[in-house]
Image 1 (cartoon, helix red, strand yellow):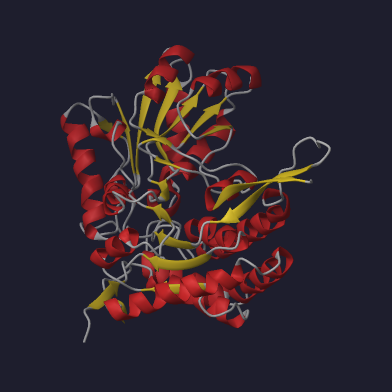
Image 2 (tube, rainbow, N blue to C red):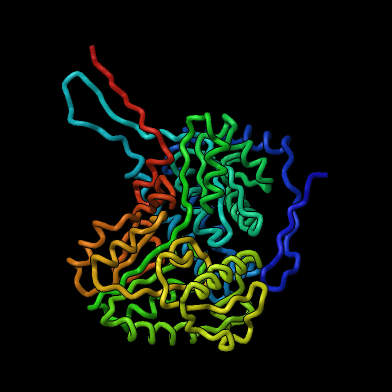
Length: 461
Protein backbone atom coordinates (compact mmCIF):
# COMPACT_ATOMS: atom_id res chain seq x y z
CA UNK A 1 0.00 0.00 0.00
CA UNK A 2 1.25 3.48 -0.83
CA UNK A 3 1.75 6.16 1.85
CA UNK A 4 -1.39 7.88 3.16
CA UNK A 5 -1.85 11.65 3.01
CA UNK A 6 -3.83 12.95 5.98
CA UNK A 7 -5.47 16.37 6.02
CA UNK A 8 -6.56 17.85 9.35
CA UNK A 9 -9.19 20.56 9.68
CA UNK A 10 -7.88 23.68 11.44
CA UNK A 11 -11.35 24.19 12.93
CA UNK A 12 -10.84 21.55 15.60
CA UNK A 13 -7.75 19.57 14.59
CA UNK A 14 -9.79 16.57 13.51
CA UNK A 15 -8.81 14.30 10.63
CA UNK A 16 -10.89 15.45 7.65
CA UNK A 17 -9.51 13.70 4.56
CA UNK A 18 -7.32 10.66 3.94
CA UNK A 19 -5.98 9.83 0.50
CA UNK A 20 -3.51 7.26 -0.76
CA UNK A 21 -0.60 8.89 -2.56
CA UNK A 22 -0.08 8.00 -6.18
CA UNK A 23 2.56 5.41 -7.00
CA UNK A 24 5.14 5.87 -9.74
CA UNK A 25 3.07 3.54 -11.91
CA UNK A 26 -0.02 5.72 -11.58
CA UNK A 27 1.94 8.92 -12.19
CA UNK A 28 3.45 7.46 -15.35
CA UNK A 29 -0.01 6.41 -16.50
CA UNK A 30 -1.35 9.93 -15.89
CA UNK A 31 1.50 11.62 -17.75
CA UNK A 32 1.23 9.23 -20.69
CA UNK A 33 -2.51 9.87 -20.88
CA UNK A 34 -1.93 13.61 -20.75
CA UNK A 35 0.56 13.49 -23.62
CA UNK A 36 -1.74 11.32 -25.70
CA UNK A 37 -4.78 13.47 -25.06
CA UNK A 38 -2.90 16.66 -25.88
CA UNK A 39 -2.12 15.43 -29.39
CA UNK A 40 -5.87 15.34 -30.03
CA UNK A 41 -7.02 18.25 -27.83
CA UNK A 42 -4.71 20.76 -29.51
CA UNK A 43 -6.35 19.96 -32.86
CA UNK A 44 -9.84 20.44 -31.44
CA UNK A 45 -11.27 23.74 -32.74
CA UNK A 46 -11.01 26.56 -30.23
CA UNK A 47 -14.76 27.13 -30.10
CA UNK A 48 -15.27 23.48 -29.14
CA UNK A 49 -12.64 23.71 -26.42
CA UNK A 50 -14.32 26.83 -25.05
CA UNK A 51 -17.73 25.14 -25.06
CA UNK A 52 -16.39 22.13 -23.18
CA UNK A 53 -14.57 24.28 -20.61
CA UNK A 54 -17.62 26.48 -20.10
CA UNK A 55 -19.58 23.33 -19.31
CA UNK A 56 -16.88 22.37 -16.80
CA UNK A 57 -17.24 25.75 -15.07
CA UNK A 58 -21.02 25.40 -14.96
CA UNK A 59 -20.77 21.89 -13.50
CA UNK A 60 -18.40 23.18 -10.83
CA UNK A 61 -20.53 26.17 -9.81
CA UNK A 62 -23.62 23.95 -9.55
CA UNK A 63 -22.14 22.50 -6.33
CA UNK A 64 -21.34 25.90 -4.82
CA UNK A 65 -22.79 25.34 -1.35
CA UNK A 66 -21.06 22.01 -0.76
CA UNK A 67 -17.78 23.31 -2.17
CA UNK A 68 -17.90 26.39 0.08
CA UNK A 69 -18.31 24.26 3.19
CA UNK A 70 -15.43 22.02 2.10
CA UNK A 71 -13.20 25.07 1.68
CA UNK A 72 -14.00 26.15 5.23
CA UNK A 73 -13.44 22.72 6.74
CA UNK A 74 -10.16 22.20 4.88
CA UNK A 75 -8.46 25.56 5.49
CA UNK A 76 -10.52 27.45 8.07
CA UNK A 77 -11.94 30.45 6.22
CA UNK A 78 -15.29 31.62 7.63
CA UNK A 79 -18.18 29.97 5.82
CA UNK A 80 -19.72 33.40 5.27
CA UNK A 81 -16.77 34.19 2.98
CA UNK A 82 -16.14 30.88 1.23
CA UNK A 83 -18.95 31.05 -1.40
CA UNK A 84 -17.25 34.15 -2.78
CA UNK A 85 -14.34 32.00 -3.94
CA UNK A 86 -16.64 29.84 -6.06
CA UNK A 87 -18.09 33.00 -7.62
CA UNK A 88 -14.57 34.28 -8.25
CA UNK A 89 -13.58 31.02 -9.94
CA UNK A 90 -16.53 31.38 -12.31
CA UNK A 91 -15.76 35.02 -13.11
CA UNK A 92 -12.07 34.44 -13.81
CA UNK A 93 -12.70 31.30 -15.84
CA UNK A 94 -15.37 32.86 -18.05
CA UNK A 95 -13.33 36.05 -18.47
CA UNK A 96 -10.31 34.09 -19.66
CA UNK A 97 -12.43 31.98 -22.00
CA UNK A 98 -13.93 35.14 -23.47
CA UNK A 99 -10.42 36.45 -24.17
CA UNK A 100 -9.16 33.25 -25.76
CA UNK A 101 -10.22 34.05 -29.33
CA UNK A 102 -8.36 37.35 -29.43
CA UNK A 103 -5.39 36.15 -27.38
CA UNK A 104 -4.81 33.04 -29.48
CA UNK A 105 -5.51 34.56 -32.89
CA UNK A 106 -2.77 34.52 -35.52
CA UNK A 107 -0.58 37.61 -35.67
CA UNK A 108 -0.51 38.78 -39.28
CA UNK A 109 2.01 41.43 -40.40
CA UNK A 110 1.55 43.84 -43.27
CA UNK A 111 0.86 41.94 -46.49
CA UNK A 112 3.60 41.46 -49.13
CA UNK A 113 2.73 40.27 -52.61
CA UNK A 114 3.65 36.64 -53.14
CA UNK A 115 3.96 35.81 -49.44
CA UNK A 116 1.72 34.47 -46.71
CA UNK A 117 3.14 35.30 -43.31
CA UNK A 118 1.77 34.89 -39.82
CA UNK A 119 2.67 33.93 -36.29
CA UNK A 120 0.57 31.25 -34.61
CA UNK A 121 0.41 30.63 -30.87
CA UNK A 122 0.76 26.91 -30.34
CA UNK A 123 0.16 25.07 -27.04
CA UNK A 124 3.16 23.98 -25.01
CA UNK A 125 1.91 20.46 -24.26
CA UNK A 126 1.37 19.18 -20.72
CA UNK A 127 0.95 21.79 -17.99
CA UNK A 128 1.68 20.69 -14.41
CA UNK A 129 -0.21 22.96 -12.02
CA UNK A 130 0.81 23.06 -8.35
CA UNK A 131 -1.92 24.87 -6.42
CA UNK A 132 -1.94 26.21 -2.83
CA UNK A 133 -4.44 25.91 0.02
CA UNK A 134 -5.12 29.57 0.89
CA UNK A 135 -7.20 30.33 -2.22
CA UNK A 136 -7.49 26.80 -3.52
CA UNK A 137 -9.72 27.54 -6.50
CA UNK A 138 -8.80 31.14 -7.32
CA UNK A 139 -5.13 30.27 -7.66
CA UNK A 140 -5.78 27.07 -9.62
CA UNK A 141 -8.16 28.69 -12.11
CA UNK A 142 -5.52 31.20 -13.20
CA UNK A 143 -3.60 28.38 -14.86
CA UNK A 144 -5.87 25.44 -15.56
CA UNK A 145 -8.67 27.05 -17.59
CA UNK A 146 -6.52 29.19 -19.93
CA UNK A 147 -4.02 26.34 -20.28
CA UNK A 148 -6.72 24.01 -21.58
CA UNK A 149 -8.31 26.74 -23.68
CA UNK A 150 -4.94 27.20 -25.40
CA UNK A 151 -4.83 23.50 -26.30
CA UNK A 152 -2.68 22.17 -23.47
CA UNK A 153 -3.62 19.32 -21.19
CA UNK A 154 -3.40 19.78 -17.41
CA UNK A 155 -2.24 17.68 -14.48
CA UNK A 156 -3.24 19.32 -11.20
CA UNK A 157 -1.53 18.54 -7.91
CA UNK A 158 -3.25 20.41 -5.11
CA UNK A 159 -1.98 21.21 -1.63
CA UNK A 160 -2.14 18.36 0.86
CA UNK A 161 -4.31 20.66 2.98
CA UNK A 162 -7.02 20.95 0.30
CA UNK A 163 -7.18 17.65 -1.60
CA UNK A 164 -10.95 17.81 -2.09
CA UNK A 165 -10.50 20.92 -4.24
CA UNK A 166 -8.65 18.91 -6.87
CA UNK A 167 -11.32 16.23 -6.75
CA UNK A 168 -14.14 18.75 -7.17
CA UNK A 169 -12.46 20.12 -10.30
CA UNK A 170 -11.99 16.59 -11.63
CA UNK A 171 -15.68 15.86 -11.03
CA UNK A 172 -16.63 19.02 -12.94
CA UNK A 173 -14.36 18.10 -15.87
CA UNK A 174 -15.84 14.62 -15.99
CA UNK A 175 -19.42 15.94 -15.76
CA UNK A 176 -18.71 18.31 -18.65
CA UNK A 177 -17.48 15.45 -20.80
CA UNK A 178 -13.90 16.64 -21.27
CA UNK A 179 -12.00 13.96 -23.19
CA UNK A 180 -10.06 11.52 -21.03
CA UNK A 181 -6.58 12.79 -20.20
CA UNK A 182 -7.27 16.49 -20.87
CA UNK A 183 -7.65 17.28 -17.16
CA UNK A 184 -6.28 14.96 -14.47
CA UNK A 185 -5.44 15.28 -10.79
CA UNK A 186 -2.93 13.57 -8.54
CA UNK A 187 -2.38 13.29 -4.80
CA UNK A 188 1.35 12.73 -4.51
CA UNK A 189 4.46 13.42 -2.45
CA UNK A 190 6.96 16.28 -2.83
CA UNK A 191 9.47 13.80 -4.23
CA UNK A 192 6.95 12.74 -6.87
CA UNK A 193 6.33 16.38 -7.77
CA UNK A 194 10.06 16.93 -8.21
CA UNK A 195 10.23 13.88 -10.48
CA UNK A 196 7.36 15.19 -12.60
CA UNK A 197 8.99 18.62 -12.93
CA UNK A 198 12.12 16.85 -14.21
CA UNK A 199 10.12 14.59 -16.55
CA UNK A 200 10.33 15.34 -20.27
CA UNK A 201 6.59 14.73 -20.62
CA UNK A 202 5.88 17.91 -18.63
CA UNK A 203 6.22 21.05 -20.74
CA UNK A 204 5.29 23.84 -18.31
CA UNK A 205 4.98 24.21 -14.54
CA UNK A 206 2.56 26.67 -12.92
CA UNK A 207 3.41 26.99 -9.22
CA UNK A 208 1.81 29.12 -6.52
CA UNK A 209 3.32 29.02 -3.06
CA UNK A 210 6.22 30.12 -0.90
CA UNK A 211 9.61 31.36 -2.06
CA UNK A 212 11.20 28.21 -0.63
CA UNK A 213 8.71 26.10 -2.56
CA UNK A 214 9.49 28.02 -5.74
CA UNK A 215 13.21 27.44 -5.23
CA UNK A 216 12.59 23.72 -4.80
CA UNK A 217 10.52 23.52 -7.97
CA UNK A 218 13.15 25.49 -9.91
CA UNK A 219 15.88 23.16 -8.70
CA UNK A 220 13.83 20.13 -9.72
CA UNK A 221 13.69 21.47 -13.27
CA UNK A 222 17.35 22.46 -13.44
CA UNK A 223 18.99 21.23 -16.61
CA UNK A 224 15.73 21.34 -18.56
CA UNK A 225 14.80 24.18 -20.88
CA UNK A 226 11.31 24.34 -19.42
CA UNK A 227 9.24 27.41 -18.74
CA UNK A 228 7.77 27.95 -15.28
CA UNK A 229 5.26 30.39 -13.89
CA UNK A 230 5.89 31.32 -10.25
CA UNK A 231 3.62 33.27 -7.92
CA UNK A 232 5.48 33.35 -4.63
CA UNK A 233 3.72 35.77 -2.31
CA UNK A 234 4.74 39.15 -1.01
CA UNK A 235 5.03 41.76 1.69
CA UNK A 236 2.56 44.13 0.09
CA UNK A 237 2.68 47.77 1.24
CA UNK A 238 0.07 50.51 1.37
CA UNK A 239 0.71 54.25 1.55
CA UNK A 240 -1.96 56.56 2.95
CA UNK A 241 -1.22 60.09 1.71
CA UNK A 242 -2.20 63.21 3.61
CA UNK A 243 -5.15 63.82 1.28
CA UNK A 244 -6.62 60.30 1.57
CA UNK A 245 -10.27 59.82 2.50
CA UNK A 246 -9.82 58.04 5.81
CA UNK A 247 -13.39 56.79 6.04
CA UNK A 248 -12.63 54.85 2.84
CA UNK A 249 -8.97 53.97 3.37
CA UNK A 250 -9.12 52.65 6.93
CA UNK A 251 -11.87 50.01 6.56
CA UNK A 252 -10.58 48.85 3.20
CA UNK A 253 -7.08 48.44 4.58
CA UNK A 254 -8.43 46.55 7.58
CA UNK A 255 -10.10 44.10 5.23
CA UNK A 256 -7.04 44.04 2.98
CA UNK A 257 -4.87 42.94 5.89
CA UNK A 258 -7.17 40.61 7.81
CA UNK A 259 -9.44 38.90 5.27
CA UNK A 260 -8.73 35.17 5.23
CA UNK A 261 -6.91 35.71 8.57
CA UNK A 262 -4.19 37.51 6.64
CA UNK A 263 -3.36 34.38 4.66
CA UNK A 264 -3.34 36.10 1.28
CA UNK A 265 -0.33 36.42 -1.00
CA UNK A 266 -1.50 39.90 -2.05
CA UNK A 267 -2.86 40.93 1.34
CA UNK A 268 -1.67 44.15 2.96
CA UNK A 269 1.25 43.42 5.31
CA UNK A 270 2.65 46.90 6.04
CA UNK A 271 1.15 50.39 6.01
CA UNK A 272 2.84 53.77 5.75
CA UNK A 273 0.78 56.80 6.80
CA UNK A 274 1.54 60.50 6.39
CA UNK A 275 2.47 61.99 9.76
CA UNK A 276 -0.28 64.65 9.63
CA UNK A 277 -3.06 62.04 9.63
CA UNK A 278 -1.29 59.18 11.39
CA UNK A 279 -3.12 59.31 14.74
CA UNK A 280 -6.52 59.75 13.10
CA UNK A 281 -5.91 56.84 10.74
CA UNK A 282 -4.62 54.52 13.45
CA UNK A 283 -7.61 55.27 15.68
CA UNK A 284 -10.02 54.34 12.88
CA UNK A 285 -7.96 51.30 11.95
CA UNK A 286 -7.88 49.88 15.48
CA UNK A 287 -11.64 50.36 15.81
CA UNK A 288 -12.14 48.44 12.59
CA UNK A 289 -9.99 45.53 13.73
CA UNK A 290 -11.71 45.36 17.11
CA UNK A 291 -15.04 45.01 15.32
CA UNK A 292 -14.05 41.56 14.02
CA UNK A 293 -15.32 38.37 15.62
CA UNK A 294 -12.85 35.49 15.86
CA UNK A 295 -14.40 32.07 16.21
CA UNK A 296 -15.61 28.82 14.70
CA UNK A 297 -15.66 29.54 10.94
CA UNK A 298 -18.82 27.45 10.51
CA UNK A 299 -20.76 30.02 12.57
CA UNK A 300 -22.36 32.94 10.74
CA UNK A 301 -21.14 35.30 13.48
CA UNK A 302 -17.44 34.64 12.72
CA UNK A 303 -15.59 36.84 10.27
CA UNK A 304 -12.13 35.67 11.40
CA UNK A 305 -11.35 31.97 11.51
CA UNK A 306 -8.35 29.92 12.56
CA UNK A 307 -5.04 29.95 10.78
CA UNK A 308 -4.36 26.88 8.69
CA UNK A 309 -2.05 25.20 11.20
CA UNK A 310 -0.30 25.84 14.51
CA UNK A 311 3.13 26.34 12.92
CA UNK A 312 1.75 29.17 10.77
CA UNK A 313 0.25 30.85 13.84
CA UNK A 314 3.51 30.40 15.75
CA UNK A 315 5.39 32.10 12.91
CA UNK A 316 3.20 35.19 13.32
CA UNK A 317 3.54 35.08 17.09
CA UNK A 318 7.32 34.94 16.69
CA UNK A 319 7.46 37.96 14.37
CA UNK A 320 5.17 39.90 16.71
CA UNK A 321 7.20 39.05 19.80
CA UNK A 322 10.40 40.07 18.06
CA UNK A 323 8.92 43.43 17.08
CA UNK A 324 7.63 44.08 20.61
CA UNK A 325 11.03 43.24 22.06
CA UNK A 326 12.59 45.76 19.66
CA UNK A 327 10.28 48.59 20.75
CA UNK A 328 7.04 48.16 18.80
CA UNK A 329 3.73 48.84 20.55
CA UNK A 330 0.70 46.55 20.31
CA UNK A 331 -2.69 48.26 20.04
CA UNK A 332 -5.05 45.28 20.16
CA UNK A 333 -5.87 43.44 23.38
CA UNK A 334 -6.23 39.68 23.08
CA UNK A 335 -9.05 39.95 25.62
CA UNK A 336 -11.21 41.49 22.88
CA UNK A 337 -11.23 38.11 21.12
CA UNK A 338 -12.65 35.44 23.38
CA UNK A 339 -11.84 32.57 21.02
CA UNK A 340 -8.12 33.35 20.86
CA UNK A 341 -5.91 30.55 22.09
CA UNK A 342 -2.32 29.35 21.80
CA UNK A 343 -2.98 27.09 18.84
CA UNK A 344 -4.54 28.21 15.55
CA UNK A 345 -7.12 30.76 16.71
CA UNK A 346 -4.87 33.80 16.61
CA UNK A 347 -6.21 37.21 17.65
CA UNK A 348 -5.47 40.00 15.15
CA UNK A 349 -2.81 42.52 16.05
CA UNK A 350 -1.86 46.06 15.02
CA UNK A 351 1.65 47.31 15.76
CA UNK A 352 3.00 50.87 15.72
CA UNK A 353 6.47 52.24 16.52
CA UNK A 354 7.78 49.78 13.96
CA UNK A 355 10.69 50.14 11.54
CA UNK A 356 12.54 48.15 8.91
CA UNK A 357 14.93 46.58 11.38
CA UNK A 358 11.98 44.34 12.33
CA UNK A 359 11.01 41.22 10.41
CA UNK A 360 7.36 42.24 10.77
CA UNK A 361 8.07 45.01 8.21
CA UNK A 362 10.40 43.02 5.95
CA UNK A 363 9.47 39.34 5.81
CA UNK A 364 6.18 37.76 4.85
CA UNK A 365 3.90 37.23 7.88
CA UNK A 366 0.96 35.54 6.15
CA UNK A 367 -1.25 36.03 9.17
CA UNK A 368 -3.46 38.50 11.06
CA UNK A 369 -0.89 41.13 12.00
CA UNK A 370 -0.01 44.52 10.52
CA UNK A 371 2.67 47.12 11.18
CA UNK A 372 1.80 50.80 10.67
CA UNK A 373 4.64 53.29 10.25
CA UNK A 374 4.60 57.10 10.17
CA UNK A 375 6.24 58.82 7.15
CA UNK A 376 7.00 62.44 6.29
CA UNK A 377 5.81 62.32 2.68
CA UNK A 378 5.89 60.68 -0.73
CA UNK A 379 9.66 60.33 -0.99
CA UNK A 380 10.03 58.48 2.30
CA UNK A 381 7.00 56.33 1.61
CA UNK A 382 8.33 55.34 -1.82
CA UNK A 383 11.74 54.44 -0.43
CA UNK A 384 10.23 52.25 2.29
CA UNK A 385 7.70 50.59 0.01
CA UNK A 386 10.51 49.58 -2.37
CA UNK A 387 12.71 48.44 0.51
CA UNK A 388 11.65 44.81 0.15
CA UNK A 389 12.74 41.65 -1.60
CA UNK A 390 9.11 41.17 -2.65
CA UNK A 391 7.06 42.93 -5.31
CA UNK A 392 3.57 41.56 -5.88
CA UNK A 393 1.20 44.49 -5.26
CA UNK A 394 1.25 47.92 -3.65
CA UNK A 395 -1.52 50.43 -3.02
CA UNK A 396 -1.65 54.22 -2.77
CA UNK A 397 -4.55 55.94 -1.02
CA UNK A 398 -5.07 59.46 -2.28
CA UNK A 399 -7.56 61.79 -3.97
CA UNK A 400 -4.84 63.02 -6.35
CA UNK A 401 -4.67 60.61 -9.29
CA UNK A 402 -1.66 62.36 -10.82
CA UNK A 403 0.27 61.90 -7.58
CA UNK A 404 -0.89 58.30 -7.40
CA UNK A 405 0.28 57.61 -10.95
CA UNK A 406 3.62 59.28 -10.29
CA UNK A 407 4.20 57.00 -7.31
CA UNK A 408 2.93 53.97 -9.21
CA UNK A 409 5.50 54.47 -11.96
CA UNK A 410 8.31 54.26 -9.39
CA UNK A 411 7.00 51.35 -7.33
CA UNK A 412 8.81 48.03 -7.86
CA UNK A 413 5.80 45.77 -8.02
CA UNK A 414 3.62 43.80 -10.41
CA UNK A 415 0.35 45.61 -9.67
CA UNK A 416 -0.29 49.07 -8.27
CA UNK A 417 -3.71 49.93 -6.83
CA UNK A 418 -5.12 53.33 -5.98
CA UNK A 419 -7.83 53.41 -3.32
CA UNK A 420 -8.25 49.63 -3.30
CA UNK A 421 -6.15 46.56 -2.49
CA UNK A 422 -6.04 42.77 -2.26
CA UNK A 423 -7.91 42.19 -5.53
CA UNK A 424 -7.23 40.40 -8.79
CA UNK A 425 -8.87 41.80 -11.92
CA UNK A 426 -8.86 39.03 -14.55
CA UNK A 427 -8.72 41.68 -17.28
CA UNK A 428 -5.29 42.78 -16.00
CA UNK A 429 -2.01 40.86 -15.99
CA UNK A 430 -1.17 39.20 -12.66
CA UNK A 431 2.58 39.28 -12.24
CA UNK A 432 5.21 39.60 -9.54
CA UNK A 433 8.72 41.01 -9.54
CA UNK A 434 11.77 40.28 -7.40
CA UNK A 435 11.11 37.34 -5.03
CA UNK A 436 7.37 37.51 -5.70
CA UNK A 437 7.85 35.41 -8.79
CA UNK A 438 8.04 35.41 -12.55
CA UNK A 439 5.74 34.87 -15.47
CA UNK A 440 2.19 36.13 -15.85
CA UNK A 441 -1.37 34.88 -15.52
CA UNK A 442 -4.75 36.42 -16.34
CA UNK A 443 -5.64 38.94 -19.06
CA UNK A 444 -4.92 38.20 -22.69
CA UNK A 445 -1.21 38.46 -21.85
CA UNK A 446 -1.54 35.42 -19.59
CA UNK A 447 -1.98 33.23 -22.67
CA UNK A 448 1.52 34.14 -23.85
CA UNK A 449 3.04 32.05 -21.06
CA UNK A 450 0.94 29.03 -21.98
CA UNK A 451 1.79 29.02 -25.68
CA UNK A 452 4.84 29.35 -27.90
CA UNK A 453 4.97 31.47 -31.05
CA UNK A 454 5.51 29.64 -34.33
CA UNK A 455 6.20 31.64 -37.48
CA UNK A 456 4.88 30.66 -40.89
CA UNK A 457 6.69 32.20 -43.91
CA UNK A 458 5.14 30.93 -47.13
CA UNK A 459 6.24 32.10 -50.58
CA UNK A 460 4.23 31.58 -53.77
CA UNK A 461 6.35 30.59 -56.77
